[in-house]
Image 1: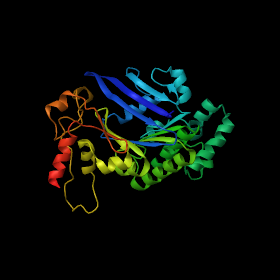
Image 2: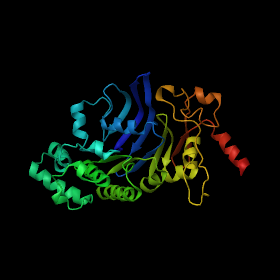
Image 3: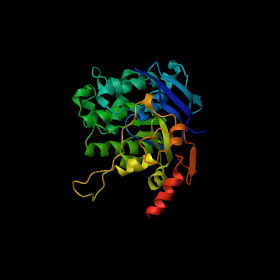
Length: 329
């Protein structure tokens, strides 16, 4: 049995312009100890997907489909039961630690809270564990900083504290939602190395959301490419990087800066912008921005096409793309 199995997940959000499908029928599985990356532009449904796993969606959101975690169905699970899983068996590192951490509570209290709630530790026992966690994630002189507040730490240190909180109860699944977005390049590498080492050390499964394709290449074994609330391409990371079958995936890769690019050269871009959720076409969500768009793309949701190595892609024009490539070659 997979640790996590998501089937036909739909999330509908209420907006000022009416209901909008933020997640549209996605499927994936995650085994124990496996690593999964999710990529896509802002507004493509990445964070909404993982928030649905954590039960952190707005109260007006409507969720359908199935999310089975270690045999337990999370869709429709009462909040009291969800609280026993969230922070205990599923941990989450949020994108911006300054908003994830409570500014009026000390670090010892915040990191120790999951230990008191889920493990029943006393305040003294939790404090001892918090010290060990802060040492493990690399907070310097942790013993003297247990009673400090979040604003007294640097951005990189706050993110390390967020990691310590997510790991406090030894979760089976760790979710990292763009954990290095607000950090400089050197600190980004340190944080990613720390997450990678802890995942390997503790045998956790990992879901990593990132805009950075290099981060995905170095840290996960399989990946989802999301656009418009849908998974347009998925598979082993090495296969997706090698094939880049979907036009959207190709656009993401083409937009990356590369070593050797002449100074002043313009990067390739994907024309247009991500449409609002209520404006997504009924068919392929990328229809209209894609140069291969035909009328059928607007009308029909593309079925999954199986490529070698468990590589899946949703596009009805793969044949035409391949033919164009062969002519160009």
